Image (cartoon, rainbow, N blue to C red):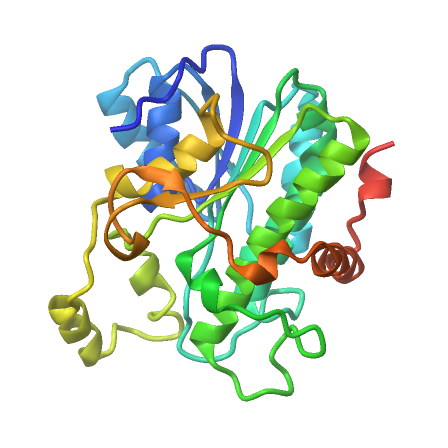
Length: 310
């Protein structure tokens, strides 16, 4: 098991901290001494997760704050609260996301739900928190991608799936490829500007969390009957959340993590096992495309690097 280095004195934000890999990352970062802001969409669920962690680690320093990555106004409000506090931020963990809703849905701002929640929301949050990150001595941004990014393609002519026939898995793959491109471009900008900020990415392989069910159940009273059968008889290797969170924790805290690098499981099919350096898909290595996507994201969100960092 990966042992998180001492995080005493570190100030951390983890999105999606109430369940799955976000909750596990929060617990282990707090156990290592970090003060963690649990950034969650539903405060009651965040408070319940906080109480669970405190039951195991009574000295954990945890604070719950609301942010909805599918609502740019919520992102702005969250970041404004953090910036008003003025405390340097050592680590931002972009973990929260949504996976494969049953049909095309949109965010509050009208973006395709997965592209908006998984990429544009974290993009806006990262830029709005950059002043606090750059005030820290050795800041990091660790962003959760997915092995599905290997099958992703950025449809610059139709990012919101308004013209193409909507394919929920392809839209998810696009959003997770975009997360990798965000990681790479932020690392390039950091190097160009001489920042100490380390931008990294990870994927959890096939980890048992509620991510696989939460998206499918959107807009439905219950999960479709076929889902239980598919889950029960799926032959792919799977792992529990304790192991599946380790690539993200490695990316976020290891002294051996490298700028722009991508980490994932080392076992069968890259789905399970200890952490290793993962091979990023070719499309994430296109510097021009990465810069183009960054520029498009600035236009779509109205959140720019120039406005947030002098």
